[in-house]
Amino acid sequence: MSALATSPKGETSVVTTDDRGLPVFDTHVLERVLRMESEAHDPVLITGEQIEADVLAYRRFLRDRKLAPGVHVVPLVQVDRVWHIHILQTEHYREVCESYLGRFLHHASLICGAGGERIKPWHTRE
Image (cartoon, rainbow, N blue to C red; front, side, top):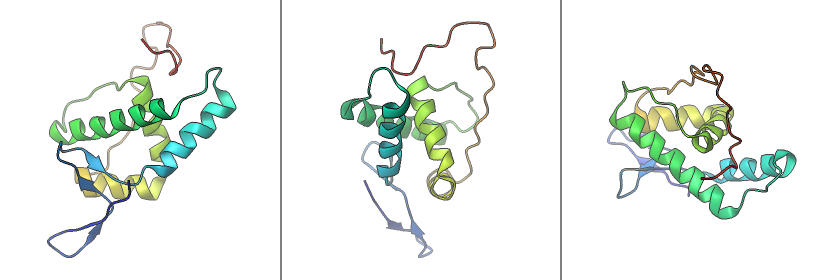
């Protein structure tokens, strides 16, 4: 979804909001990279439906960060995978963060297997 909006100051934004308060921005690159990564590395290829669901979950994650900016959460593995891909699109990620959240959303791996638990691969769906 590609969307541009104009702010009251006349600035163009890469993000709009849908009727659920979810950010709407161009996700084509995220979707394409998810598919390419899956083809290169995953024993079970990701489906188009899974890609849509993961990107939607990421958009919900961003909305939740906007609604509760001081709350730190560990996102689902599927959300984290999309987040990593988005962060690597540095200019677009910065624009989405600043336009939608009003700030840059930093990523830190604080709890990655700290308790010795086994981390399930992203494609393991429950």
